[in-house]
Length: 186
Image 1: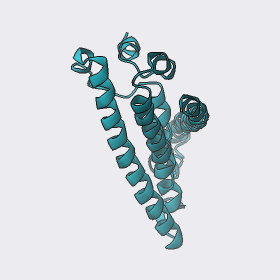
Image 2: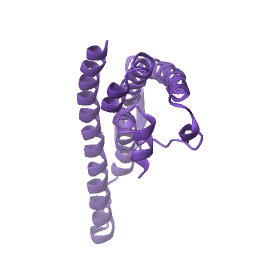
Image 3: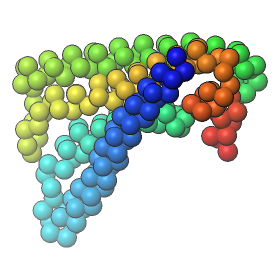
């Protein structure tokens, strides 16, 4: 089982990295478009009429949702860990199993509802009216694209905590120990 966890971690890490790169590209695009809009608005009095819709409806959403799983993999999510440091290792592992499995369930539910909502928007040909006509399904599909990998990463974490409770070396290799939690804060 340990080998399977490491193999799936490698696969999930590749997916996380690809989505994080896409999120980073969205953020860079947001900066470039905003800069171009400012120059066009104040230097030439010709703002980019489509910029606000593209930034707020598409790029901002993609920049947020596509980076979620990578952030969890790197232990960079906001974490209230004041009491966790006082837990014995076994209690910490149990708490992480419960929390990860609950999180995976919630994230998977959001991904399923988001996918259904995106499909309905596509079938109904929903659009956002602005300077241009923007398809709604395109922004709605980003939510399940970000939440499904987050659900998989959370499920993987829960299984790793459950199955490797008695294998400290594997916990450290996967970044799941209490010591590493303290190290990520330093």
